[in-house]
Amino acid sequence: MRRSRPWSFSLAEKTGMAALLTAIPLGLTAAPQIAAGPLALFLLACLAAPFLPRSSFFLPVICRGTPGRKGIALTFDDGPFPASTPILLELLARYRLPATFFVVGEQAAAHPELIAAILAQGHSIGNHSYRHDHLLMLRSCEILEADIRRTQDVLARTGMRPLFFRPPIGITSPRLRPALASQNLQALTFSCRVFDRGNRNIRNLAARVLGQLQPGDILLLHDNPPVSEEDTIHWVEELHCLLGRLSQEHRIVPLANLIDQPVMVAEEH
Image 1 (spheres, rainbow, N blue to C red):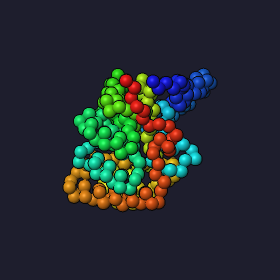
Image 2: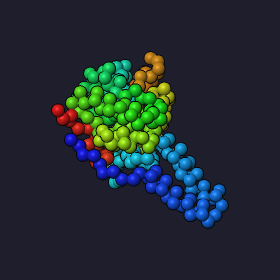
Image 3: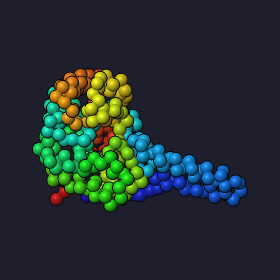
Image 4: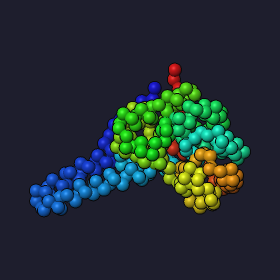
């Protein structure tokens, strides 16, 4: 059984305490509106932080490789899908590139054969919630924890258990930290994305990715099926170009190598 990490105050908790300790003496010695300043700034930080995928404000978040690592990790969200995931797997095999699939529990439960195919090809798998609820971080602690646990249970039936959770759209909240702790999970987001909107915006996908990538990046892409047959053809063409260039011009490594931690473990029975 993987041990839980020791608990410590989050940056949000430390910032909140600092704001309060600053506001109290200001309130005693200055005008009340000045004392409200630190508290207002803290509130603004709390409102902005959930929408910053690289932020570790509410909980520790891994978004890049370990300092000094020069490789790049490929990650794909939202699947698996029978209409698109096998295409992606074939291309990854053709170019001999490793990837991590952050899967949606509902999709994994419906298509266990695709999870088996991902693992058989040597890729790793992470937890991406059960239904990809865009408002998941606004739900109660009980609902959030149950959603994450349900996906863990689905994936455990495949003989493995993820060690990382990627929140839908990269949004975090104060509720996420205890929910992940209950499942011995860590949060992992990304440092490079091109807003492909789940493969609904694939125009110049390869050029957009290649124009942004830096050593140490965790690249976010998707394995959702495009909306039409014509778009699917174009998506495959873009993937051919992208993966071919990546295999020739960049050092693509497994996510575990980039962050110096295993991404999943064999499930204990």
